Length: 184
Length: 184
Image (cartoon, rainbow over all chains, first blue to last red; front, side, top):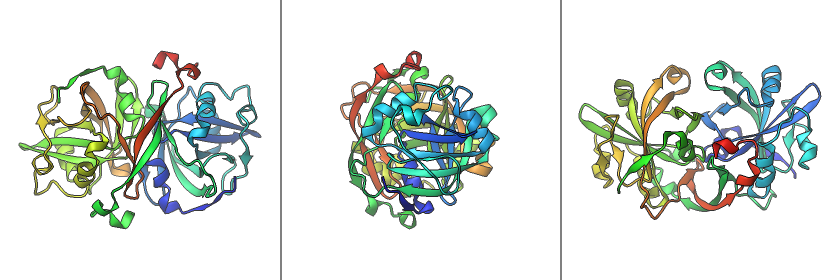
């Protein structure tokens, strides 16, 4: 549960594989969490991420008002909680307390980090112009953290049908990345 | 290698987990392929997908000219080829021939399906307005195919550092999806 600095230039390593993530917000003294699996990288540095957050999400009001959030990367041991977080509303409950998760102060945003997650990305909304048409907010990651001592590091991915695929084995194909060596 | 109809309403099941995909295009009688791992679902029905395709991609000209592509979902047995496809340019080569992949006629677009892939999504560009700022094209899936007889069905995900994580075990958490039962 000790978060260490993580370089912004490598933030895309957390998002590009497409894991289910949590989004934390804070507004009027209340923190909230939502689950998100529609997101993508838009740029490397500064790291830009497109996030699908719509009118059906209670977090939308906090995101609009504060223009800040934290994207937290949960691992498979948290899968049940993460799914439950995505199946209830923060309107009348404190999800951190309800699910036994620990909010930690962030450095650059008001939204809290999630202590139990593998990585946390502090984000500011830099473009809300796609929200009306696509429910998409573009956020810039302004500070990133990782828990280097966490043993379980496998993330999981939503199939969209209530099943989730867990990270399996890793293929090392670095030698074949002849065009993109500078990115490795 | 026999592609069967796949319902458009379930196309998000292929994209939401965040696999590495191939994008096929056809322009002036030449087909081409690129590898893509920055993409996301934007809507369920009709299925809308945001795709990061930039000036560094030779496929951009074909996509701009024809406003059509096929998004093909490769499985882990194709990982080496898929990475190699992302590390060379179609400017002076026929990637289908070079990598021993079979172009199949699509039904609604000129771009070919990739016979060796698990699923193929025929797409039309519906919004090129985000291309200048974010290198993003919004495509609508107009026809989808799956190979039901394919044995290897594990997809793989780019970590962005030349390593790739292969689908591992599947968690069935359908019973916890109390809010989204209608989507399952």
